[in-house]
Length: 394
Image 1 (tube, rainbow, N blue to C red):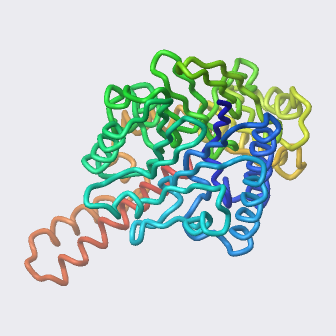
Image 2 (cartoon, one colour):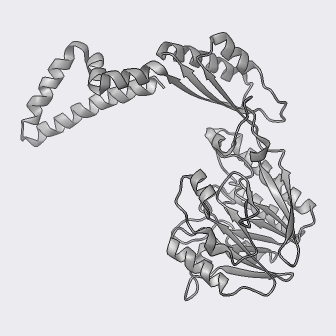
Image 3 (tube, rainbow, N blue to C red):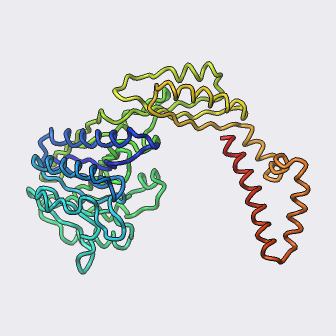
């Protein structure tokens, strides 16, 4: 049996508030499915987060559903709703009715899980294999109940589970989340096709795969080499599995070409000439303009402002689709550590510092609610000034 796995297409995502982002995510969605169908699969699996939110624009929803219906004429499509796909109120995703329109698409909604006396997955039998479809479940007890219900109904052939969760220590650590379900509770299946974690990860020993997202929602979905280019091991892809009746399999990973490239440059105390030269060099030719992530360390606030001026100049030149700059000036960190907040307040208020401190003391001794309100306003003012100072320093 040939199974192609993809996930987390996040249609409609507006990354870094860029107008080009929705098109980027749609391009990756189209390419992933076109690659999948080019392998003449027995089934295509999408393991959640088809859309980036449960209320996509009508035009977007119509286009995606039309695409899926056309794709399903070439191969069956199994889908589960991810955490971005459905609203908690009714547990329905924007493609909840698509199985009615296209009989070759099987979609598991959260409402489906709860429509029985006890929580159960959606079950699909196909070519001697049984697929258990489990949409994203926030409640751990319900999730384990759904998994246990599937394990009680395994077939004599191949048994696969499709879900949108964090299931093991590796991905839980990467996602900074606690385990939704221990891996040991999923060992009854021949293989597990999982969504939710955005960096591709195949665990042969554990018998599961995260296809990852088809387009990066953020720069931290990638790992970067010393030159700032994305490492091949973390590039976006689809997985093509060929399963034998015994459960053994061969797998091919097909890297996508359409995702917008990311670059990450790290520089400590560069001269303005060095920074400008680095920004002028785009190391790899791309069909799309890259998104550049800059991690800079400056000696002081003045140097930080000079870096910002150079970066803004390059923004206007249009070399990059977007430049995100994180600049850390050393002197601010040192100043806060050595001087403390009271020292910062004294520097900001100057000759008025003693007067404000005295006023605070007077207000604290008052019982009048109006005066207490005045004290709160004074404190809010001081804290806002302090935060503004921090923000302006990076």
